[in-house]
Image 1 (cartoon, rainbow, N blue to C red):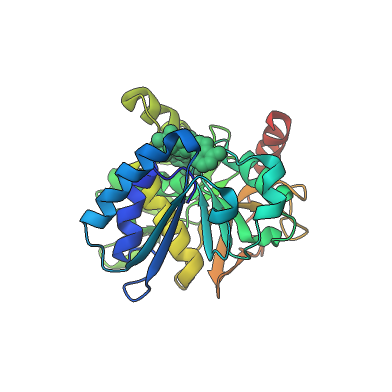
Image 2 (image 1 turned 120 degrees about the vertical axis):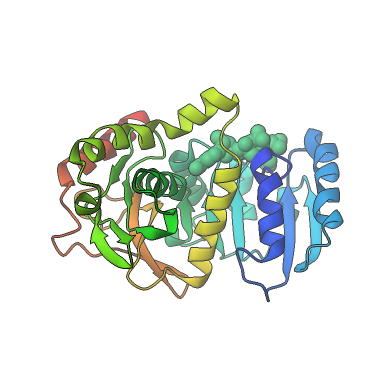
Length: 296
Ligand code: NAD
């Protein structure tokens, strides 16, 4: 974990050490990286997980050396800003999953992938599930259900206000029955208007209110994201992840780090197949892809 010692890491360490990500039977060795001037803060943060006597924590290695941090990893979570570019190629030796959170997350993720060509492109993803969770929560609030009763939101595009939350495939559990969100809400104006802008602007709204970017929701979403990679997505459900587009991602140019709906099985993700029903917003998707390209 890079950026360990920052505010997201503070919430994340507990959940990882407690089994919310890799399960209750998986012992964990945490490797925490920060820059040299922050090592004092990192040492103080370390006292907390130790004080919790977290049941799965076998060891914690705190370091300011990338060559120590990036060795034999199963999962790398990049919270801190970009690593020194010239160091990346040499140090990224592991073949594990690389999850990029530090903003601009899409750009950082693409840069990390290009800096470490020995790791398959498919191993890189960036955190757009936060937007996915925000969208689920907005719909749940409006209907008076919980976020777990809402599934199959799609976030297309960039982790920024140019993203597009697509609800065309959303199913909501109401009184034990699954129904489409338009039927459940009967408020198309809200779904096509206020809902979209609220999700798009949520990150900025949190920063305005807290004077800091989101930390608790980011940490919870990182847990969801890594757990989905580790254990797979539930049958019949997909999640949104920022990944590198390829020949299968119709409507979006290749080699763009873009948020798509994916299903995950055996630690491998696949684009949700476009059988016609998943691809109604093609024009909008192209637009956001190009917005992202021109801002990158
Ligand atoms: P923070 O400022 O509290 O912590 C960042 C930490 O990274 C600091 O301790 C800093 O010393 C460390 N760091 C900086 N450069 C580093 C380097 N080269 N190597 C290792 N560590 C380094 O920030 P935070 O609130 O924990 O957020 C982390 C990042 O996540 C920010 O960029 C934030 O914008 C982003 N974020 C993304 C999402 C998302 O959904 N993708 C959501 C929330 C926040």
